[in-house]
Length: 226
Ligand code: DQA
Image (tube, rainbow, N blue to C red):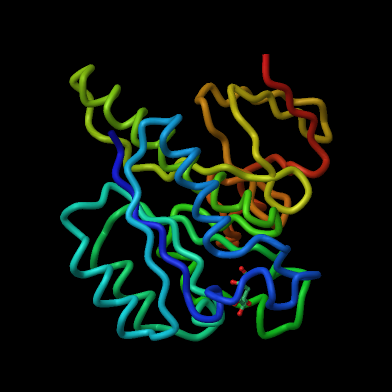
């Protein structure tokens, strides 16, 4: 059983009536019900929390830090400026996925910045309520791989395991073969391979400026899952 905290930040209590053309028509309770159904089918235990207050979110993270194996958080507008929530996630040290209903990279400039992202193993956005489901799947896959590795006597996975998307971040499962512009093939033989949102791959969800040294570009590459 993998234990996951699901945290909804400010204004998400108004889902359903709040700008439904951006955030969808599901209420928060309906969204949570979808998460509970997914959890029941996939051996996950959830604690779900919503608050409009920064400190309350931080208190919840602190209180539940020993219980949780992972965290899915939609920090709402705190995404863009809360160093306190960022620090709390870093302090708790559990694999955390930042999720958003809308595609924050394609909205107003202030929303394109996340001060949370680089303490998270992934950022998933733009899939509506399914962003949360993808976050749960990612943490489940990660926990399964960590357990398997530990059972086999290996160390726990230290690398991030990412669900990425093809245009923007894509959800890509490996093993994957990347073919670069010169035709050179690289097979990444692990179940999950990350593509950065910028379209380059470095097994990281966010561009850290090293992609040009890696040698393949995902957007010009073909990939397959056998
Ligand atoms: C949001 C995006 C944020 O910019 C916004 O402030 C929210 C919701 C989303 O889920 O798309 O409250 O996190």
